Length: 127
Image 1 (cartoon, rainbow, N blue to C red):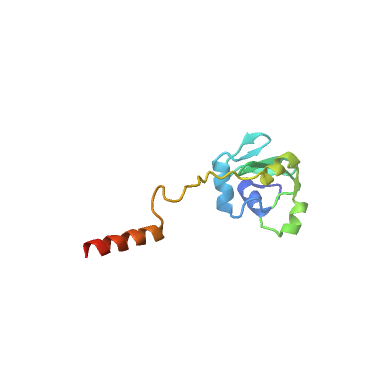
Image 2 (image 1 turned 135 degrees about the vertical axis):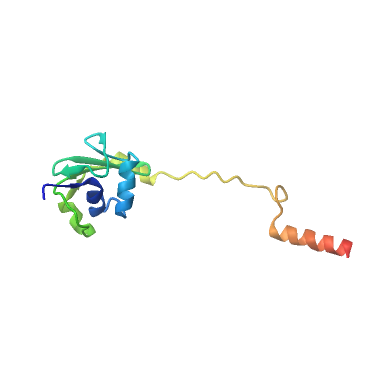
C-alpha cells in the first residue's frame, strides 16, 4: 500500500473520533497537506506533512507509513510523527473566558421562590 485517503488516515491515527468527522474537517478546510487545503479523497503518502485544525490548535504530523485500519493509541507512533509546536499545544491550557453577567437579587426575572411568594400573595388577595 503506497497511499491512502487522507480522511481514512486521520481517522486511523486517531486525530478524529469518526471517519465522518475527518471527512467533514477536510471539506471544511481544516486539513491541509503541504500547506494546501485538501478534499477527503486526496491520497497521501509517506513523508508528507499533514496539518489538522481542531478547535484553536493546529496539529502537525509527518506521515511515516500509510494506514487504512484504525490502530491502538500506542501504535500510532509507528505511522505518524507528531510535529506540533509547543506554542500550539499551549493554546489548550489558556483559561476559557465566560461571559456570565452577575445579576443583583431582585432585578430582572423573579426566581422560582419569589414567583411562588407572588402567587401566594395574589391568591390571598383575590380569594
